[in-house]
Length: 447
Image (cartoon, rainbow, N blue to C red; front, side, top):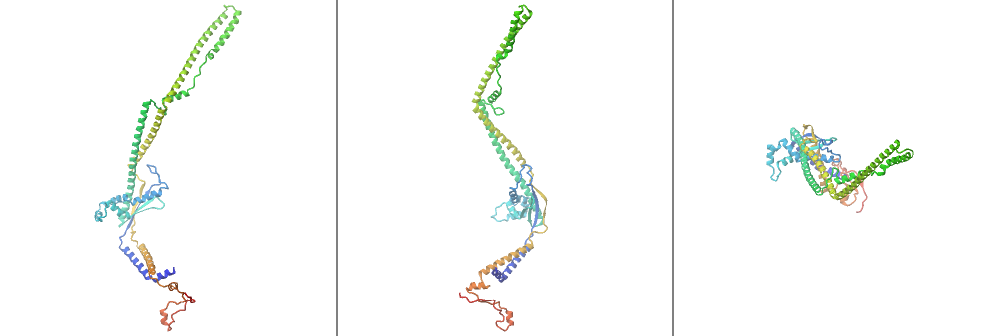
């Protein structure tokens, strides 16, 4: 470090010349450069609340990507070209003349050419701690900077709306194609189901069960009707008749055959016998009818079982087709609802970006800034001079210290004399009057 400082001190004229040249260059830039004014306009990115139509929300994981895409969009031709149209640059005679005078190798169209001029002057940043974006433009005048910043903000909002509408249109076309595909598949499935139903005669009910299976299930759940036995119906009458005959036998031994009481007992016996005979006939008929009905139900049950087994395979195919039809119908319903929402977005002119405040421009030019220019050019000249001094020292090495001399001579220094003072020599009559005492004396050492 000491050697470097000695070299810089020895070559200070080079450093001074470089620094002065840099300052003169900075002065030339500050006095000859056209002033630039900065206009600014702000917008609010409303990504905090859900989208009013789609309900989408920008999460914390996608926030950085969203902000970066918005910042890049502002420096894109899709915003710069509409902003130039708002400013009237696309029809300005001076712009058209400059475009016509461009080099022959430049094959860009007018929009791309104007955007290439406009984009480098666009600045954009997020206001710290908020969802506000500041758009700036550096122009030749205060009014131009303000108007250009406002035009950029308007073009940016319109571009955002247009991008949403274009994306909605593409989504609507894709959803419409999906709807047509699902409609075709649904028609094919329904046609196949109808053909199988006609060929097999199997029809599924509302719950997806064929008629034979439904009837078989009802019969299986129906309770069986018990058959009433004949003894259960005639038992009480037989007991009454037996008691009455026993009473007649007892009274006949005591009373004569023409006794009125005995005659009434004979009449009651005849009535009971007639009732017993009628009851036996009814019980037999009822039992026969119940038995016949039970046998018919059993036969019908077996018949339905045979029918269910016979139509099991076509019924299963129809049921599977019905499940597919139900799935396609649900998909068709969801796609139709999505298409309604997306088509609403196509005609929607709302945006999640809204302007805030009026566009404004700084009254003082942001360039050239004399203070920054002189500080920067002076620092640059000083650093460049130091680098040149070090390079010059490396290219033409000199002995500036005792250590350098030891290295160059390959020997040990015995004594070191101070720098000769011309003023002191003129005052002293002695030849060695201007010398000081030696600083270092060393023993001779053979190399």
